[in-house]
Length: 311
Image 1: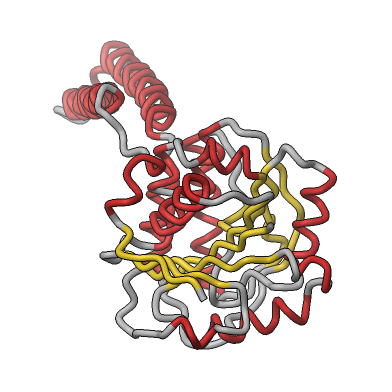
Image 2: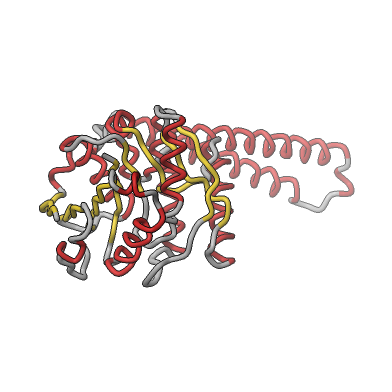
């Protein structure tokens, strides 16, 4: 059995079209193995499960809206703890994860059965501003974490890896970032992003920034160390600058404007103190965070599930 895990908030019309497209796009043999699991992220628009009676489908109703990434973590935890399956495919409900690519992910997974396979974004269909913001996000993610992230949620996971992942607390904030952090084996295949089937996207520029910060937060300890190194480099540059200023002041006192050296040295000292204190504060915050008990989706998911409906 292949589970398709789909987080959803109000996108019932898009889900209708998505299910139809999946049925058309994948082979008959593969479709016979598919079982759809919808994580209803406390939608404000109600929808009866009988609307999808033609499919092998269940809906996990959540007590409250927890956002896209957390909904995936809860759905994955439910599946791995209470059901059995061969593989699980995680995809969005709006159609931007193209149904035709399910077949490619599945076939690649058969060739690499122990790996998580991601859909690497070869081409995006959003507007210029969004794509520019996404490029900046990938650049900053690489600089701050030392890792590359070129994929989203669209992926296929073997049961064994999915079960392990449900115990990784970082997927609560960011699903692909959590997988990178987990050190579970993964690879990716290039896939073009599709277009929304119905309705309007809820991912705006602000949401993209929050999404990016969530991805970075998964690697906060690495980020803190890199910021500390950057602060030390900045401190070294400021110190060298202060020394140069003092040398110039001593060698040519008659050509200097009154007070210029004092101003520059004072500014350098302020930069040094701010850089060191800020980075040290971040380091100790991270060290304190690492001593706290973390949220484990596999152990806490039942608190969020109102009910599970099966068609």
